[in-house]
Length: 477
Image 1 (cartoon, rainbow, N blue to C red):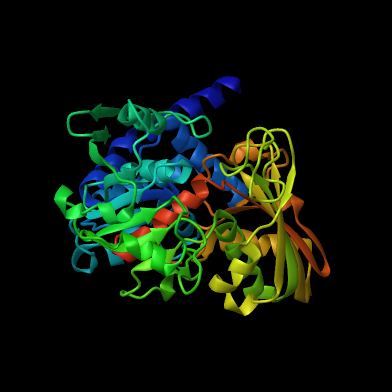
Image 2 (image 1 turned 135 degrees about the vertical axis):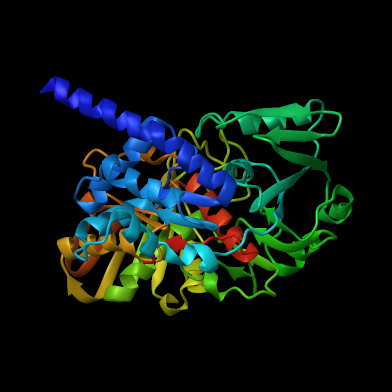
């Protein structure tokens, strides 16, 4: 029996190895991203590919073998595909349930018909992106943009704007991009060109521009045109302040913090379709807003939310002190690594910007805790109609699999789940199924979120949307 298991494992390893060059070629040459239940297989190792398949049992309630998806991948490689995101896990599940008698090649071609031949969208030239600031979010967004370079026809990170930090600044910036205490090593190669003040990451050349103020920079001098600038400093949050970035070479500004005044707060998957072509200044709201709004929308759509309170248990952040010292905010001057710190959160009020129908229905507070990353939102809700724990968890599981918010809402039912397990999660939130409590109209839902990486993924999705490089997903939901 033991030898049978080992032989099966070796066989699956061989299939995963055979998948890698096909996945890579589709991505580099045609801008096709291969997924398994919303999880990308691009640039993944053999073990990662196998683990991604195995994880499907948590949400589908059934095994998904690599033997099921490999024939679909081979069929895709023979088609005339345009830029797209194709979920071979979803296609495999649908094929197993199909009763029309189609071959796997015929079924696959039908499922992705909108991405082939005359129906496919054409590859466009690259769209320039500039990062203003290079802190926690800035560096993670940089990693994502480099990872998603694909054929070079999507988003292209051209420059990072920072204040010069002294001698060896360029080397230190590159080192911080290369190594991260929470998220690990950069997946690839990084080197610097001191003469040209650039960082080269996996072939992507990033100009480091030193400036103390947005008005000091003319981006066209660096060959940058029609770029999206991502401000991750949080220094300016209203339209007047952010408008300073609309310099020569910059056409849109995206803020990675809650926007003030009439600046639209966008949560991808919920209200990104409200953006107009002439919206040149927008906000991606906060990490907590991105975590709670998709879950609240899903629950409100099905059950209605009469009122609720959101308590976030949030990892400490850079605006807190390492040791007790003066801070303009209450309690945040106390040592972050040593204390739980009760503080305010603007996430509840920000809900109204993304979900106007819940204006006045949600309150919120936050406790900062001594962990470096991954937070939790506890949604304590009174619903408009009664439900059961089983019904609510099944509904949220289905939303995570088959709704337009499948990239925002993940679902897990592991009995031993803890925060470090979710470092690097790309979802806006992850529903902890085993923690859900329901009693009639009262429900308590626990939603984890990687407040750094998951949020950075949401930011990149918004930028992809506003630049037109958010490629269609197949099969259609």
